[in-house]
Each structure stands twice: as C-alpha cells, then as structure tokens.
Image (cartoon, rainbow, N blue to C red; front, side, top):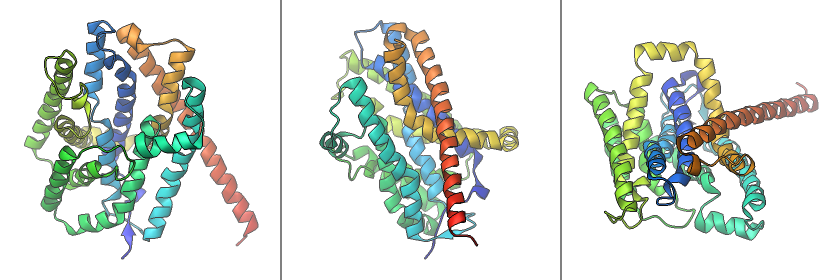
Length: 360
C-alpha cells in the first residue's frame, strides 16, 4: 500500500512556529551549558543564570522529535502518494547528505580548533561508540526513525486518537526506563514516545483544562529541573550525576516537552495569532526553512566567538550569554540563508543541465 506524506498544501503553521522557537532554545542550551558545568568556578549568580536558562530550554530536542512525528506520521490531508523507496530516497537526500557534509566539516573544524585527531578511525569510533559531533546525533536519530516511519504511519492511520494517546504514553514509559547505551543503534528507542506523541497531540482536540495543565506543568518542571540541579551540584541531593534532571529521558523533561508542545499548539491556534501567522505565512515559512541550517552551524559559530572574539559567557554573566546568543542566532541564520541560496542555485543549475541533455 502506498505511503503518504503531508503535503505543503496542508502546512500547519503552529508547527513552523514551534520549530523556530525550538531552534532558538537549542542555541540557548548550548550557550548556557558551559556556565552550568562550571559550578563552583563561576560566581553563583552567573551559575544560576546559566542553570535557569538551560533548564528553561530542556524541551528543545524532544519537541523537535515531536514536530517530526506530527509532520511525517500524519497522512491526513495528503494530496499525493509515494512509494516506500521514494520516501527513503527523500529522507536520504534531506538528511543523509547534510549529515555526511557536516560530519566532515566538524571533523576538520575540531581538528583545527580543538586538536581532535583527524582520521577516519577516530571519527567512526566517535560516531558508533560515543556520540556524533555534539548535535549531529539528531540527524542519525532522524535517519533511524525514518526506517520505522512507513510502518508507524500504518499504525497511526489505523488507531483512534485515544488509542494513539495510550500508545504514545506506553512508549514514553519506555523512554523513562530506557538505559542509555553508548552505541549509535538502537539510538531511536527512547525517542519513539516523543515521535508518536507529536502526531497524537496534533490530532487531539485541546480542551481548556489541557491548556491550563500544560502551562502549570511547563513552569513546575522548569523549577524542579533548575532547583534539583542546584541541589545535586551543591551535594544536598545525590542523583548519580548532577545533570541527570537535564536528560531528555527524565520524567521532568518528558512532562515539560509535552506541555510546551501543547502550549505551542494552543497559542498558534488562537484566532488572532492564527490570522497573523496566515497573513505572514511566507515569512514564517522562510524562517522555518532556516532552522535546519541554524541547528547545524551554530556550534561552530559559538566556538569561533569564543576563540576569535574572546567572548565567554562563563566569565561575563548575563551580558556574555546575551551577546553570544544574539550573535550566534544572527550569524547562524545569515550563514544558513547563504547556504540555502547556494543550494537553490545548484539545484537550478543541475535541472537546467538535465533539461538540455534530455529535451522534451
């Protein structure tokens, strides 16, 4: 049976909004994290600022996974069909090629700026047994989830909304109890719950109590994560390691992520904002398209700001975090836009060459 993918004609604007905000949150995590891990080495006020910002944004990657699930697992409203091989080919081009390019880029980048060994053996060992260059694990995760997506689409299509909610909850329980392994595969297992929860929350009709609960949950888990992390670093509570409440598999982050997704959907679907988003949908679509590039580029920008400009959020407190964050967002978005233009020119050139070679 043919598989379906949501077409651009049924684009959900609140998902674009969530994608943009989640990208901004990822950058915030990476800017503030160096402050958090230096507990006792930086002024306590600076540390609390970094901890508060980092804890506030812990939902970013789970919500990215939920957005992917909401887009790729929902076949409702699709206007065209594609075979399984076409789907895999599309995902390989959209994810596999950028993954290969940026893996090589960061291998060279960190060899130059961090003195990492520049060898195929080191890179492969890091990918398979440790973690692909910092943030690139997310692309490996998307590729692994893509392998399951055609089958999961059938499951989602045959499930009622309530059954889908139960299934999502069961896999989120697996997320909570999953023991992390230092292997690239099966890396996707603890994220299946998020993947399914995304399409479930897209389909479910939000009730007023759900919206209120989402706000309370997001705020409460923020306090729990920030406060618990401080108690752990201060030695007043023992969690095994001090950053355990930051983990995407922990109950606080699971609850926070679900809450943020519901808030994003509720806010994006309010009549006034929905009309505003629809009116400016072209701008929203352009900004959303840049998020992938911003995600891929921003760690290099942060490192260059630190080494080249000497801007350290760990020593400057709020001004340092704000400056690094602002310039990282602006420079990453500009570079992403430039790369997007180059990619379009390349695709246009290739298409012209093909037309000349095989005229109708």
